[in-house]
Image (tube, rainbow over all chains, first blue to last red; front, side, top):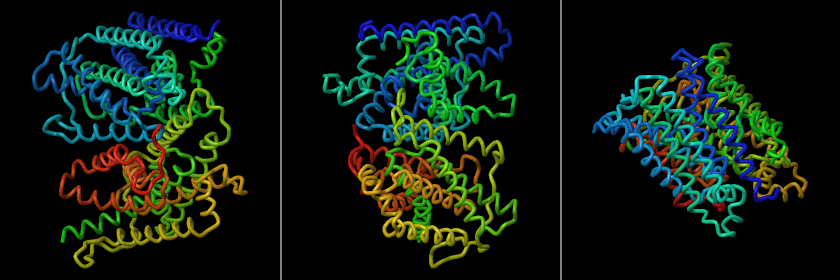
Length: 315
Length: 296
């Protein structure tokens, strides 16, 4: 197989695996009747969207941002504020969240354009904390830590479940098209060797900006949808712990693969609900797992499984 | 005389910030990574101090060295178990060096916070003060006994650290490894042991900072978060990896924060440092006294 075909081939395998997982998710409501359990799976799909978005930025474009949860919070607040002050219907409010977070992501991307590694992590962390502190302290405008009430799309939990699932599929399709094309290859080139990439004529500035824009917009969309589902948005959506959770999902599932992010999000969130029964030890377990995976299994769970299923999928 | 009061209190907090930030700057100096678990070194120190003096009834003055010991142990373990791959030929497939460091230290931070939350409890403790002197006026400035004593200890520690770095053989080795790891090892310096030493020293300093502040901040498991964020601001402001830059920047941040919280906005005092961080990274990325080379 020529080297040029290797990547589309691997990506197609990756897509097929994510679609299998999505198909499994689609039939879940047939077996799961309890609204509580369905709600938990729904939240894990919310995290899967954020994990996929973060993975695009960190895993494919090599921009290790620590702000995904902050963007979910900003998206949720965009919709909530529009609804609260101008009674903007959600069909406008949710796309508005995508637009506003895309713009903010573009600005953040511009700000951190020349920063590498630890500097990038610090700046995005500072951005995330500023966003949270500002929203949490603007009592008159956002009602601070009390949170805001948001309208909802539908009262039906199964309905919401499928809204989230369709969104997940749309996100996966978008990422697939993006990664298959030139832009995705440019991103990976920049991740692997920024200087080499620009010397081959790749517009590093533009590619990074697009990666930030898309990733942040997807986080904003997820946050906005989640806000309308829970009908309450609060600054807690943007806590650094939430970013830690997203990070651990992607690392445990497997960086730089679509399936890894999806699998990681589902496994981590579902097992965290299960571990709750053993006395809230879930974050301890996941933090330990993240360290162990980063240290000994950088390919993540999916790296292990994919290696068995398809030897050619190895790096 | 509000201004003078703010200045003195700002300088005192600056000393505590400096204790933490210098360790972070030293780690950055040798490994070019940010230790996102640095706040948890602080937290471990605060908890060791509080638990030993409250539960065992030991004098707080003996709890202080115990906290330092806990910090040293944690620093040593972190370096031994997690940081070695950064410089000992770890085939980084799937992970780049910077990303590995962010992931493991971020994970460690979450791990330690929740471990303490689970084993000790989520509530905060009132740390016993080192001396039993309430508020007293010193000229126009109001101080408490604990604040004054803790600030004196912090200053003494900083002086000791400065002498250690400047004069002792180990300090010179640390400087050499920070300048050039390969060159240092060619000159016969054991760079692995020096890196280990740096983590031990950073752990001790952060833990002592936590122990000294414990009576003032009433530690809860996430007590380290804000001191850690402040030390990120400080190392960026001082120039990443610059020890002297970190000391100066810590005092600047302490004072300007004190003034900001009174004259501008108390609610946004925690955002203030972060705005400085972003501004410095964008406008003067080498910091006050830093080295070049943080851009790609």
